[in-house]
Image (cartoon, rainbow, N blue to C red; front, side):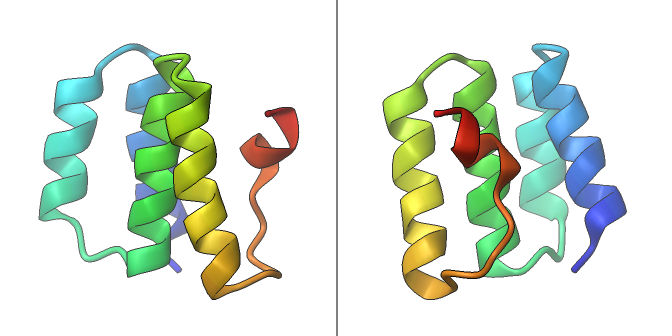
Length: 74
């Protein structure tokens, strides 16, 4: 897990820098689950909670024990 890169991408989303965050995500070597989490985080910070929840649910279908703190806020 590349937590530093994942946090960097999520911080860009948090600052409403979605285009930059998505470009970084596209170039990243994050795992499929980490990519889903970042996409969910983007939707979370856009306040598209239904879309965010859909990404987070996909993760939990793959790995029920994957830590998703933002999912708890939905």
